[in-house]
Length: 259
Length: 66
Length: 302
Image (cartoon, rainbow over all chains, first blue to last red; front, side, top):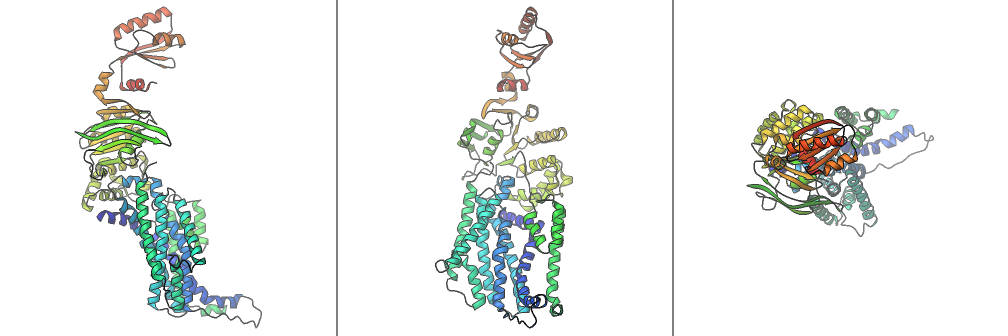
């Protein structure tokens, strides 16, 4: 356990030194908050710059607070996912490519600890960033529109966080299964995209798909109710995370560290 | 420009500050780092002149580890 | 008592056999040089011994291995080009590795400071490793290899990348380390091996072509060497000298012909007579006893 903590602390420290603890949360804040702000000011901006003919009335009905919050969240499934994948793809592949993994793992270090500590470090960063970004979005939406119940905010936060955790674990998996960070990133992104598209198109067949968590979170914000398949999707996601993590360790152990 | 009066500056100010932090941190990191993907000077311009996206772009693709 | 026993060790890359069956034992407390020209398979051998590579065939048995076969607590390893976390300081890296190897935070700190002093980079302990020079990285590499006091320290070409000064200091460091632990280090430079080691494993084309203690080696190859340098070398000279009764072996290198003999007095007389008779133009003539370098040149068959 103390060895795991040593590895984990190193991950946390590294993210301080390369400013990840600052720039990733800030990016998530700016991404999320841009949504309520543009929705709020857009009609006014159009009004003063639009050059609409005199007398033309633009009547855009103001969106509900839940819808604004939901579209704020959806920012994270595109740019947020991109940042997570690009930031995580090198955690293992990069260290092995540079040779530093061999320096570390020639010491009596458990492979399980090595992989899971890196995963846990990235996990903490993702949840922290999502929380600060989404909390700010919630606050701005409340200020500019109406307040969404904090419970709904928390529930949708956890659902979304779980989906991002699936993406993160997928990236860690490819990072340990493949030698090249670029390849790991590309495949993870492609897979996340394909899964999202397929699950979206066949949503009536794939209610359990982890990527549905994003639409369930939106549904909760817009309608105030959780679809009944949510629990199944949550369980499948957790199972997937555990299996991927276990496979990462298994595959990584089998690889030769020097080539 | 009458709509400017309707803006709640108290709400927007924190965002400007956060954005400024991002700008400063990326410049500090750029000054410390040995090598970037692409010329360093180019990144200085991107960070300073491309609002918000510049610093993020730098951290995501400009920064090179090891 | 033997620390490690290697039997029939082989390694192939894409069907190409790089290590062709090694058998040897390492005794506790010795300093062994793994010697050989570039491409002989030294690095591959060390990587297999340290567990970074899996042998294609054969076995590596440590006498003190754990039940599950883990040997990593027993060994310290320094690759030829050590890599660190550039953003850590030298001290931080050593403490990190020390803790990973099972030291408490306190022990790790104490031992790290001690080792930084020992390898001579304590002035730079708080500087980021990214700013270290090649020589400093090599020293830090040695420090990290011995931080957990392993039974066997394996160093891959620890001095080849260093300037003469650094080389001198690192060799002295190894000499001191010999008292504490078993050392196996690879090098392609004979002098380095001769200077610190008791034993030699000579690797050539993936095979051990010569091994044993320094003295035994010298004894076994107790021959004298006669060097001739001719103004102009002809095929006739080479073949006549090669087929001469007293010649045991011969090395031809341009105008220089070296002949190894056992009876040096007789050889001196006979060869000079021969040269006089044939009227070959001799520029230089030198008799010397064989150095280790000559032994190896002979073994490699150059």
